Length: 251
Image 1 (tube, rainbow, N blue to C red):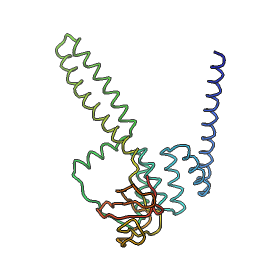
Image 2: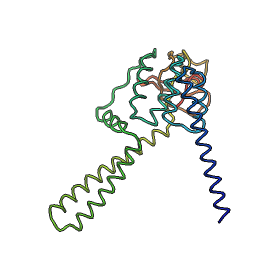
Image 3: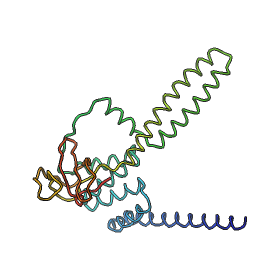
Image 4: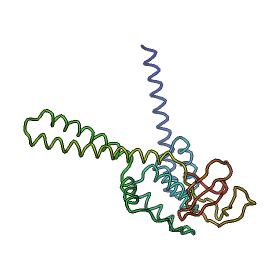
C-alpha cells in the first residue's frame, strides 16, 4: 500500500512539474511576443506545439509569423487554430486580415444554400459546446420520459412527451455536429502555399507541363496524398495539378 502511495505521489509530482514547465515556456513566449521579439516567440511557440497542439498556441504563433511578414506560415497557423476553435472571433478576424494580403483571389464554386447554412451552424459553436448540449438534452429527454410515464395530470404528460421528442432530436443533431467537427479536426487534407511563388504541374515531376502559378498564402485541397514529395491539389475554383510538398504546409 505504501509503495502504491509513493508511486502515485511521484506520478503527480511529475505531472505537476511538466505542467509548470509548460506554463513557464508559454509565459516566456508571450513575454517575447509582447516585447516584439518575434523570432524568440516563434521558437518558443513551436517548441510548445511539439508537446501538443492548442488553439491559443497556434493563434499566437500565427500572430508572430504575421508580424515577421511570413504570410504563408501565419495563415497556416491561423487555419490550424481555427480547426481547434472554429467559433473564435479573434482567429476568424486575423485570418481574414491575413487572407486579404494574399495575391491569389480564387473564386469558390458556389454551394447550395442549405449546405452553406448547415456548415455555418455547425462551426458557430465549438466541439465541446455541441457535446455538452447533446448530453444535457439526453438527460432532459430521460427526465421528460419519466414525467410522461409517471405523471397523472394529462397536461404534464403531454408536455413531457413533446419536450422529450424535441430534446432527443436536438441531442441527435448535437452529436452529429460534434462528430462532424471531430472528423474534420482529424483530417489533414488542406494546405497553404508557403513559398513566395510556386508552379503547379500536370504531373508529379518538374518536367511536367506548367499549368499555373500560385503565390504565398493560397489555400489548397489535397486530392491525392499517396506520394511523399508531391501532392495532387485542387483549388476552390476547381483547378487541379501537382505541387511539391516542400512548397506547402499541410493542416
